[in-house]
Image (cartoon, rainbow, N blue to C red):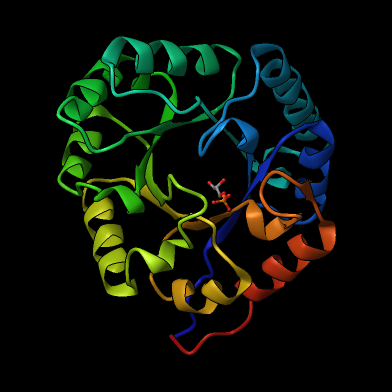
Length: 240
Ligand SMILES: O=C[C@H](O)COP(=O)(O)O
């Protein structure tokens, strides 16, 4: 049975890369500053400019003609007040999908609960880290809090691809459990072109890329040719 390929999330560092990602077929344009960490955040002014550009796409192309827009809030310690403030800062700019890192800690559930009011008015995506012994038990808490989705990424970008930390069976169980709690799902973490055939069959809604899209790695510049290769590989027929 032919399976719908996962969408392509492309992380970008400026407005020019936003345009490259849109033109290259990204399904989600993700605003992130890799130089500031795994989930490095854009400044408020830059986010506001990005939302204006994204809005103009909607006016030119229609809602269906433009990619979704997400943004990370920065690598935050699991302190509820800090996580909530960082998420609210990004949400106030009008970014429709806010990505929030949720490291495994004794305070992670408190952070999720603190975000529930924001989740009722903005679509939140929780990000777990495959290289930090993620607790899939929090998927239920994310669902209860009203999160829109959840991703698995990697925190240490020098520690290899997502597939070096979690096997496809475990990732498939993550996707199934997340779906059970009404969450859309994404897989990311130093993903390479060669990881795609293995991950397409896992069934996640999208795969996220930065390093594989760039000349010189994740802190380099987005290369349209590399983006095109990833886009094509995602759509290659698979026998999964
Ligand atoms: O959410 C997607 C991540 O930005 C992927 O970044 P990465 O390829 O550097 O792990």
